[in-house]
Length: 219
Figure 1 (cartoon, rainbow, N blue to C red):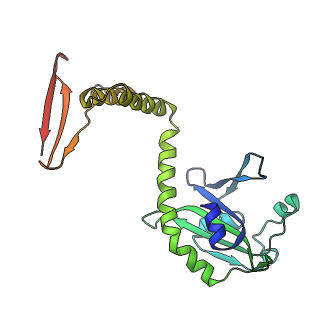
Figure 2: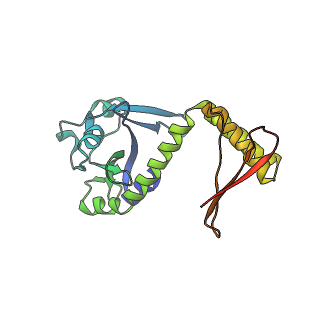
Figure 3: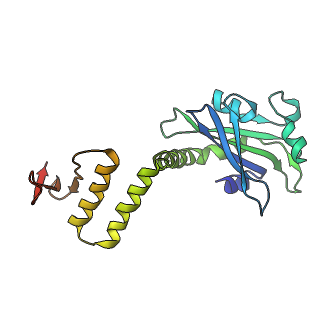
């Protein structure tokens, strides 16, 4: 995303900040050099250019960064980089209710590779694909939140391994649901499969005595 957005809008630098609603901050990982590991950046909600955009949900198009009191010059002083223009845009979730990310572009480059200001066409161009980015980032965040539970990850891997060990659907279902029961501390679990042509859900579960399998079907 970062690479393509920068290419399309001809920005010298591009950063995508993910909005962490729980901790009320923005975070991103930025590579400091080709051979170096990415460094994590965290910004409180409402602070700086990106924090302001996340909080107000408004786009900022700043032709001269040093003339804007919200811009923090300390980063330029530390890195030796000179920020001229900034385009900072909120990215919303599918329902357009929540800001899931903020894209910050620095220094649009003219045909001679000289910094210039971003214009209204740049904003319109970004909005053409912003909704797609929002949906994908929202999905990625959901998967990330689920994967933070290491027990859940372990159970998922065990369930996946059952697909390799057996191609029999019944055995695979029992293995997957056994992991689900263990993960959720449940006494029983049922995975219902959709039989589209008959418009039914069906499953196989163990009988009360645990000695046999019983097939269940519901409309």
